[in-house]
Image (cartoon, rainbow, N blue to C red; front, side):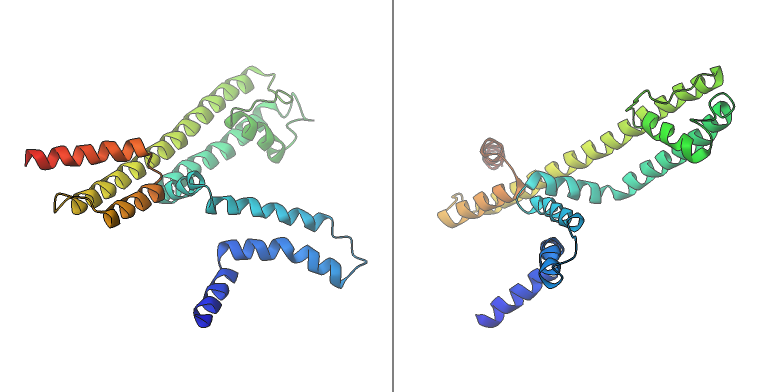
Length: 219
């Protein structure tokens, strides 16, 4: 038992949550070892603990899982966004640098405008004044909306597929439990644990149970 507990503690130290905790408490020990140091900035490392919310919030876990499953599509969409970002920054620079050298004096300066426009934020503090700059602005905004819609669609599709897979797995477990025609107490607890793990509501679980029962009656 002691060996198992020790292995668990060692595993936690090198886990994602353990590393976040370690980084978060580093400022405390540095302050104790070096009292004269001003480590107020390092205290912001405690904010890293917000990432531990994923341990308690299945929605965040589902989000990261969906992004990981569709990572290739996400990377492709982000690649398009980077291309649009660099291209529109360059175009708006050449279109506006003579008219507004203080705001579009270089391509890096133009990147601020491009990013704000592509993300559809549009602060309005920097805007084109030439006709060609306005045309580029319209095209940039349309490209930004398209990429955002693409990313949203990828994420929504990933969530939908994930929920569908979980329902299929839950249905398979119900079928196994109903092989003898009765769901006993052990099987009921197992299904309930799986329901909570998958984030299914009791209504969804009941609907799946009724669906499987109808299938068995029709066999």
